[in-house]
Amino acid sequence: MNWDFPMDPGHFGSYVRNLRFMTSTTRKPLAIVAAKHESHVQATVVCAMIHGLQIRIRSGGHDYEGLSYVSDVPFVVLDMFNLRTIDIDIPNQTAWVEAGATLGELYYRIAEKSKIHAFPAGVCPTLGVGGHFTGGGYGNMLRKYGLSSDNIIDAKCVDVKGRVLNRESMGEDLFWAIRGGGGASFGVILSWKIKLVLVPELVTVFRVERTLEQGATELVHHWQLLADKLPDELFIRLMLQAVNGSQKGTKTIKVSFIAFFLGQAEVLVPLMNLSFPELGLQRKDCTEMSWVQSTLFWAEFPEGTPITVLLDRIPKGEIFLKRKSDYVKQPISLMDLEIMWKKMMKVEKVLMLWNPYGGKMSEISESETPFPHRAGNVFKIQYQSNWLEKGIEATNHYLNLTRVFHNFMTPYVSKNPREAFLNYRDLDIGSNSNGNTSYKEATVYGKKYFKGNFDRLVQVKTIVDPDNFFRNEQSIPTLPSQRKKREG
Image 1 (cartoon, rainbow, N blue to C red):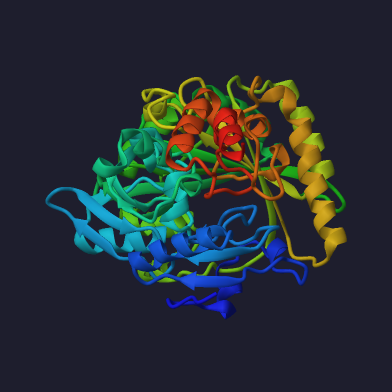
Image 2 (image 1 turned 45 degrees about the vertical axis):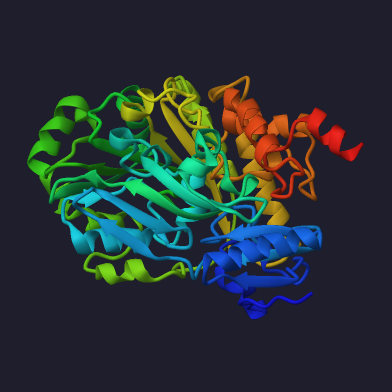
């Protein structure tokens, strides 16, 4: 095969964020195309189609199951990291962002131009915008401004025929599909036009930690009753984890209340003391800073770290990991929280992040974009398992711990379907090893990720990519009748 455009076969590991997919047995791509121009993307699509190869599209490499750089069939990685131009237009409060840019780069470039503009997206600076936005993309401003995908006003992509399309030429159905439906099922996203949002010159953050002995159970219960009803400007995440107790040989649960507030501490402290007095928030717990500095706080950089760290594309450390997700519609009772703590201390290595909903998220219709998890959700759960031990035994051990705890949580989370978040990709909930998933097979994960929007995504997919060229283990399939017609 003659690849007469940029290749980088030695580049495979540079953007692998999950060490589970950096083993000697991990299947490697035939080539890595490090595109430097949209024409390289077009040529890659056409060439791969001619030769019957799968394309895996990688912008930041943070996908939890490695689908942007791993496949069980012959494949090529189309790496977008060179396509990361960011054009900020403050007068019109918009920006064009190429798919290979990271969130950190975007945040830095916005802050270069304005102290009062921002963009609602994730808290990990090394996330690539290409995948983050197309799965919905959420962060600590979702209660005020919604998801990243809710603030996208145009896009450029390469379709299965190698054409470069924008919103007008792709049509509203495809534009709808790529804003939360997983762009890699429909084409290659080149860039996004986003709508910037306004923020105060100073925002406030805090991190308050409590253990079971300090009343964490009651605090968590109270948080569930109010987290989705607080003013839209306030986002309080919980991080729950088993830790060593004060007595040797004992365990306890530590709960971290991590907050972002679009305003100053003199407003936040009275608000918290009125709505959540049990937490006992004090002025000394709060730190005021610019929005761009708050992105460093949320990324857990030490205080005083220069904002230029946002331009670093490589994470602080690479680990083995597994992630799963859930949505909670009814607060978990005090009695059930106690049961949950016992299970967490037994499992020990699985922690949870609870992210509150409400606000803007409850105002947007489930069908406005493919992302359906809107009104009715109190919070979303991310289950995290991280480890450094190498070898298949260690991997299987931690994967099993995560699955066991996720199964334990079944009574407390959404049902029919048990909803899941696309950007917390999880191959445990149904997939096909070669990406040639049938409609029936795909409904297993499709209904969990997209609920009633799944069938519309299938219809769009059937029109724009009838031969299912753009596919992966959890991609959107074509309609069965269309597939039979073409195979016949």
